[in-house]
Length: 303
Ligand code: NAD
Image (tube, rainbow, N blue to C red; front, side, top):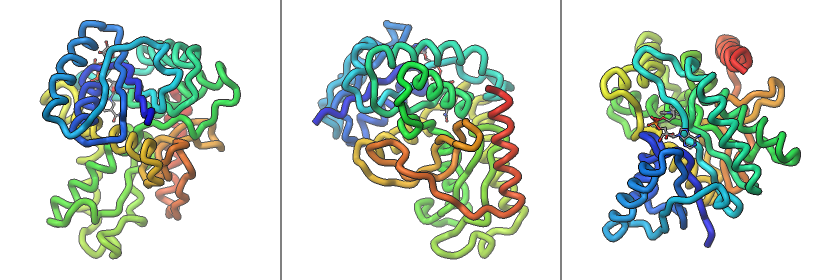
């Protein structure tokens, strides 16, 4: 089966994605890595290949060029500048805009018609730009073919923190982070449950607020300590990859197209082989609706 993934950018995030692919027995059959730093790409490929004899996966990994995207199912973009201590994700816009434009144009010029998966920050702005640049090259390119990792990672952090506090398996925590993958993200607590019970049965308002702040500021706290974040996002990208290649119809909070505002922003959506099959409409309360609108305005203002 051809389940080729082309990874563009193999820095901290890209190489963690590749490493997570190897360790998770995914449906990826070929992984092709492109990076302007050719030595880093080749070094990673050698190192990753040397794990295959003892890894659960059977896949081919190699360095490639843009002609490889023609028959790829997924192009995952993790190239770009990352946050330095004290920087917000939005501080990266001007630097990463040019990188994203160059990459998207090269991908489209080589006949790509699969699913883009984006991790580069500021995530929602970059994901919107990928869609716009792709559509300029191919007017029939559809918004469902573009997915930003969005608040997948923030949702994973949220479930971990709640599960840890309640001593309940995080897979039984049904709660989402929505909106911008950035400082204006929010948790629609009115939709959050532990098992089938409302989360308010377990945690009070102060406890929920404390967890939200910890989720929102996690990247800052990690970057202060180690300079970047990589493992969490690597696994989240594989989660989305599996949903696409496995035609899983899995609900994930990814950054997807918001028609009313012509931007990409995170909300829960069903992911399968076509990318975004459909968005899940949540019943948000008035406060949550306002928070979603605030996130939309922030993303729109940065475009
Ligand atoms: P990094 O500096 O370690 O790696 C970036 C890589 O991109 C480098 O290897 C560089 O050579 C390559 N690159 C730059 N321009 C390129 C181009 N035009 N074509 C091909 N390769 C190119 O950075 P990182 O820590 O891996 O972070 C990458 C991006 O991911 C940043 O924007 C960061 O903010 C973002 N990020 C997102 C999330 C998320 O949840 N979405 C989490 C962590 C980091």
